[in-house]
Image 1 (cartoon, rainbow, N blue to C red):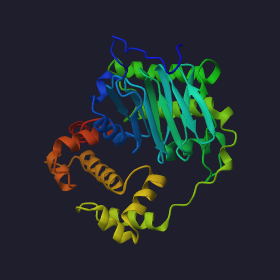
Image 2 (image 1 turned 180 degrees about the vertical axis):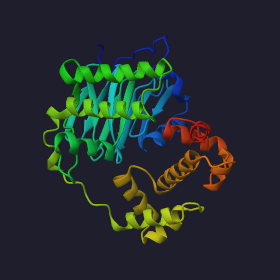
Image 3 (image 1 turned 60 degrees about the vertical axis):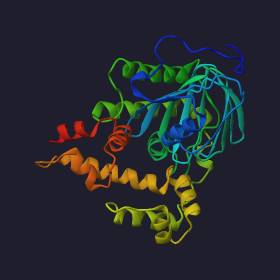
Length: 335
């Protein structure tokens, strides 16, 4: 493999997860905003002013995890800090990245996946031409499997110590499994998400991830998860009680007895989202319940309006990203 600083051109063949494209853009601000909508707010800087910047992001959502493909084209500095609500495995298909994560500092290549914990600071440099498949796993979902499968005590954070060797053993099996899931999606058979098979595939993928990362996660019981602050719980209660009403960040912060900035920080650290993102997700779940109930005369428009979604196109896109299907498909199956 060439050094991670060497430019590598994109292949002419279709990119992974091509049917699940979210966007393609040469605008740095747009790329930063669109990627953050799936992952988390982060620093994103181009390291060579004249380099070709051409970002593409593909995203296949499931129930507890998502499959992603990202390529920025140019050499990039990416600094999300703490991820908050999710773990992230990055498998370079081309190129590579320099990873600084907690106390670890290593190169991620097609032979070595980066494994990022939600509670440790992350800073990365992606080489020019790097294309990666990323597996994003909900923190609570992975933690529950770590407790059940590895005996990680309740209240302790599952911590992967370094990257994962993809050349042999459980790491090689994990890589094959991830790429098989991607190939299934590319063949028109979305392998994760709704349904018994989709949930089984997600559980199997998390189990494979834990098995491959377990040798480096032996110290997983050493870090205690901090308890959520009271103002976070007050905010969640207030949002749940006013779910069908228009809310603002300032209003929720006042009800929780804290500042908007402190509330934003608490949601990022403990929930991996924002207060208004939490509100949106609860409304999406409520809308899904109504669509699944499929009462006579129910329409997608009526359900969207009932839960405060005025822009139907954005509602449908947010719904598809979260549940892996369109609102009309849920209504049809439920009715």
